[in-house]
Image (cartoon, rainbow, N blue to C red):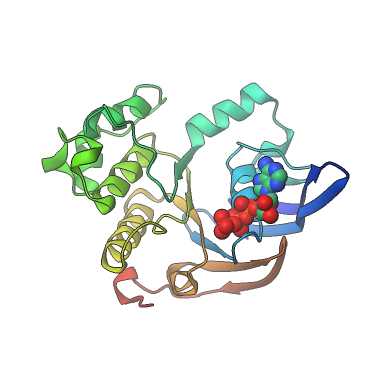
Length: 232
Ligand SMILES: Nc1ncnc2c1ncn2[C@@H]1O[C@H](COP(=O)(O)OP(=O)(O)OP(=O)(O)O)[C@@H](O)[C@H]1O
């Protein structure tokens, strides 16, 4: 099993109040598969992703990613894990405004151990002709493609996507989902995606429904649906 999350707990305290954001969350994802975490706003999706991505810490429980127990790593090792193994994609693209498309991708490839060829990545995301453009000259969908290129250029084992289509219109969302499916197939990258869009679950091998910090349902699909056939 590629990802094993076991009995993960996380609380935040505000003054005397302590709220349990994740209550014994457990889930699994096989290597090369797509997992979707579905849940309403505030259910704990981003908190869970941040802990799996090594940017936040759990109170208890464990996470193994490709055999590495990330919940047992010290800060330096956790930084290595984040830098070498995980690509992040967010709702808002977080590109550096005064750098071109290529330069935004180079920022990551320059510090990566075994980066992919930038031309190959630009080709994979369909942005060869925009390589010299600045983010402000691109549509939202194109900016998200740059963000995807930047996330995959380090050749991560795991791609974590937090509402990757949240800021995009219907058609562009479908294009971005189709690109993520292509990355999964062509590069073999395992993908964990959070969304509140139930339809997106159809393209996943496994869907976990999160409600108030608890997994209330796990749905496994023997066959996944091509993103082009998903409608909402
Ligand atoms: N650093 C923090 N300090 C205190 N509370 C926090 C912190 N981060 C998140 N929370 C709280 O944890 C709960 C879950 O937040 P989280 O962002 O994980 O939910 P979510 O399911 O991703 O929501 P959304 O879909 O709206 O992004 C929320 O009630 C939020 O206010």
